[in-house]
Image (cartoon, rainbow, N blue to C red; front, side):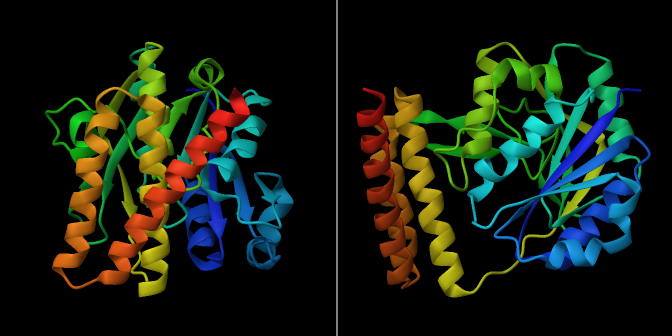
Length: 284
């Protein structure tokens, strides 16, 4: 059985992160847990307390909120410097069901071409949240699939990856602050020939936390900003489908009289275009 390191990201959520870490430590296949603590105030370190003494947990603390990609990448680099064969990345608001890691590793061991394998991700009520998704460039969107479908990408809410695949594919693209970085990574991995699959016998319960209106608008802005950056990065049908998708997103907010939400979509689109333009200037 290959050795596994686990990574999770914390941002002002000590309670859920601590519960996530405890669920990871209960899996015998996991030898080390790395927590990337964005905008750290020391509360997570205090919460974990004596658990830090046995050397199975490391905390990478940052004074700033770096976002998902830039927060996860230092932990990925730390794993690549170790002897771990696999790395399990999981959201801090998720709890691993007993035996999930063993099942994921077993599935990966059956096929050396697999670079990324995900569990069934469940809602707290036991219903299926996601089994992976397929992308639709001409609609600039993704579509959730069932057990019989072949996913184009897996959400990084919970994925097991082969460290050899990470060495081949590279790290997450830090141009994405939040959202779409997992889609981009999985498509990049597939472009390099790595397989992606879902392991039906592994489950993770993921709590989608309710957000206040202001937070929801910020999240929506990040989502659209990253979507625009992603579309220009992948080009082709994604750019053709992007205007249609943005109109749909704005109309969806107007339909429910959420003018602030519609404005957040527009602002996110502008931010995405500006960031793409600036990145192009820097690279030229």
